[in-house]
Amino acid sequence: MTMPRPGSTTDRAALTAGTWGLIEGTHTAPAGAAQALLVAANMTGTPPAGHQCYVDSATIRIGIPEVASVDLYRRPITTPTIAAYDFETADMSGWGAPHAGVAVRTNSKSHQGSWSYQLTSDGTDALGSHVETVKILCTPGAEYMVDEWIAGSSAAKDTFAQLRFYDAGGGFLQANNGIGKPPPGPGAWEYRWAVGTAPAGATHMTLLAVLDSFPTAGDTIWVDEVRVRLVNRAAGVRVAQGLPANAVYDDWRGVISGVPYEYRAEVRSVIGTTVGGVWTP
Image 1 (cartoon, one colour):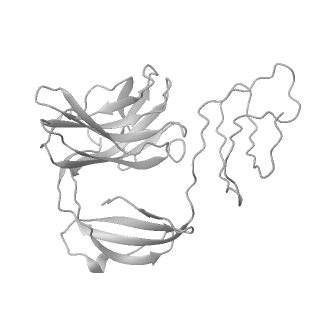
Image 2 (image 1 turned 90 degrees about the vertical axis):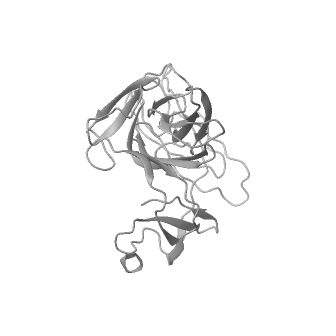
Image 3 (image 1 turned 180 degrees about the vertical axis):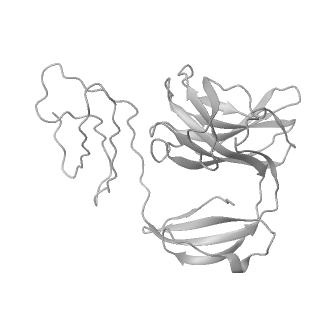
């Protein structure tokens, strides 16, 4: 049995024999700490001889500090959506064959509306499983952004959005990945995006939702509200400053009727770091 070292913290869970369970926790490094050690499995008590414990997808990540305040920015939407998919109709002609898995339109889970696109990995490609649209026209030198909502069955498998660019003959030219990370919890939705500039010779692009981190057979993601548009570099205007975490802000007095807007939050933490969010309608 491994004994905790000075300053250590422990997360415990009683698991049913033969079943998997997720054990997770958040802890603050004490003053003077320089390293962290993850003990992935520790059978407490006095386990009988031959007792076995299996561990998979053990990870340690930097935590997110608490929010101190939030500034809110607004700008008009000036770049129209080029393609969008919400899966509310049975027309799936905008999507190609899935890679390393089986994909179906489903009403078992959705982020908005009643339907989404479900991909179940078959575990045949350690580099990941994905769903990909058919090819969409693009312009070399133009900067594009794909954004989408993804939920995953595993809180230990990364998901991300991706843009791919192709030439007139269908040859692959370039891929641009968004940030890859696990969902906030099994089955929980999270916003994903990727930005890329179409390279010289590009005539078409595709939009992807990717299940990464060595997916095994049965690992599943759900995808909803997929869209692509040209990137808008306008800074916008700050409409609120110093809002508390989870605040609700009514901006109806500052907008013009009939004009679509999008917003982003700039978050300051209790330790002084600042994170700028992405623009969302």
